[in-house]
Structure formats: structure tokens, C-alpha cells
Length: 158
Image 1: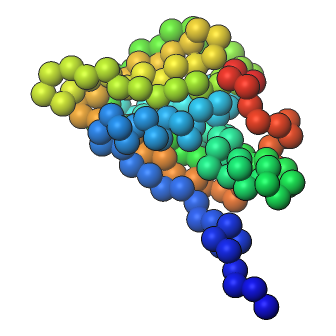
Image 2: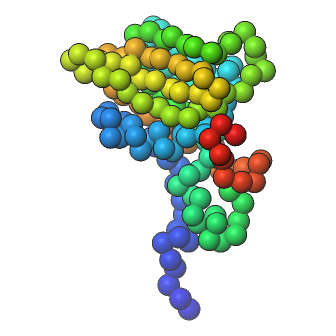
């Protein structure tokens, strides 16, 4: 009987935090090409928290799925930005409840004394700009993975 391999180990849901630009770059790569309905955007000004429930492609599982010949997966994840002082959007029609957005990247534009802007760049020239007192972004998987409906690796903006 052979020993189990690392690839056969149980995978755990992601639960990551980003407090520095380098951490945010890793987090951004994991949410690249995530999709979500506009209705899943939420800003609670009193809590200074912005959140979006998104369906992200499981980039961290792509190679294993390819190697084993199994379907690619997506998972529902909660992307939360704390310390939010204000939210601005461009190219996002919140009145159109049927619109589905695609997230291309999450970046940080530093300001003074740790403050700055978290920028969520969307496919189709859309963007959300969150003014923050300090960089604090978390990503947490909240469902079990499911087969990606498209069956293929996303091409930016799919």
C-alpha cells in the first residue's frame, strides 16, 4: 500500500487576510475572474465595512484538476474590506438588478499615514473605489466548491 500524497489531502476553505500590498496581490490573484450579481454588493457605513459575495474560480486548484482530469471548480467567497470611509463607483448600474459583474483585480492606492483607496477593477471598464483608513481586506470561502459551469479556465472577463 502506497503512502498518501499531498495532493490527496483534504483541502480546506480559504480564509485569508491582507494588511500589506504584497498580501493583497496574493488575494487579488485568487479572486481574479470572480463573478457576482450587483445585488451582492453591500456597504454598511456605520460598520465601515464593504462586502461582496462572489463566485470565484479556484485558481489554487487548477493544476490539480488538470492533472487529475476532473472538472474545474468555483466556490462562493466573501470579500470584505474594513475601515471603509466612503465608496465610489464607475460603470456600475446598481439599478439593474440582473447585471452580473466580473472582478479583474483588487489593488491598493496608498495615501498618507496608512490610508488610501482599495480599487476593485471590473470587466467592461467598471470599478469600485473604496476610501479606507487602513488596508484590511479578507477573503473567506463560505460554501463547498462546485463544478465551474463553463467547464474551462476563465479568460479575463468571462
